[in-house]
Length: 183
Image (tube, rainbow, N blue to C red; front, side):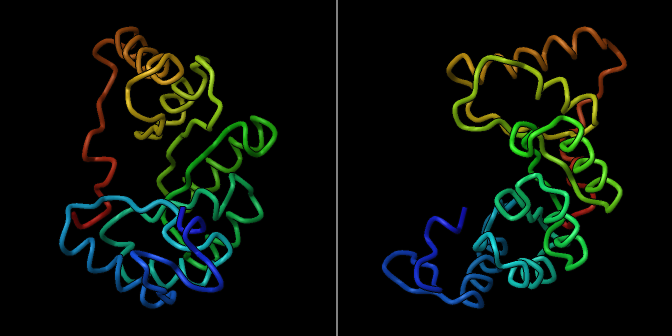
């Protein structure tokens, strides 16, 4: 998250202090030069206005994902939707407090044409609930890290089991998860 390199009102990259506008230009150039499809928390987590400007500039081409921006919180998500601050929600089920609240956040995001990405959190276990939720909600995307270590591979293995169970009814969405973007 960009909040990690945001110090004293500036983004510190390679020894340079960049303003919000400089960061936005930096991201615009990055997506023009590289095949980037998603930016997660590209600006400081309280900068809804900056997120809105970035989304206006490049949100039709890539996912602008709110993680720390929204923290799976309905109030923050509503504010972001109203301001057009992003186009995707990183949904962390155990971040908000209840499964009901997490599902309400997903529903709100989907109903506002946001992509939803189910995500693990640090300190994860081998529990596979997020794999099941990713499929049940039709997210098309899950964030659980590189396929190493038990707490990560368990989630990928569960997705494989779900695919086997669903058989011909399972559909790999692939690049269609990004069909609304000009890739």
